[in-house]
Image (cartoon, rainbow, N blue to C red; front, side):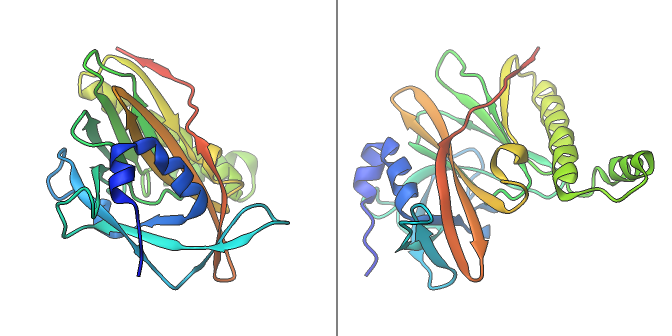
Length: 239
């Protein structure tokens, strides 16, 4: 039977970092859309048999659980995580304001998207966003390939997509009347040359929101935890 210390995690959200170091966490499509957008909801982990999970360095790797993260039927902090959900839409930027209503924020698995983090408002609220530019930068790819006279590489495509998504997010934050700094977790920081995906989490310590991502690499039916890293961004001033 799967045992998760939900009460401990909800009471001390920073524990999620150690949890991510020990367990592969893969958000499901259930959280692409929030139950009540902008409002916290309960999420739960479910153990899956495939893929297999591995943790630790190459020389000391050991098996670990693979946990799918989805919507919970429970409304009990002893049985589920109370979390904000930053929604995902193909070809769009989706936002959520993180306040004191929950200790966590999750979004769907990132495999090329960009995550935006706004500077903290006086009341501690942080506006975050998940941007996906699929279908919106094909013209830029064509122009690049014409200019260099060859096909675009995966790394170059990732860089081009990242730049487009940063531009998309900058404009989207500005359109909301946001004034402050915005930092970006982009594919160049988590894709590892195009082979890694990221599980991104926000966790609140008192009045401060912190952000981390679990870097995952899948090969031959095994998903390995490359590491869990704090989100470090170069901020862009808006407004």
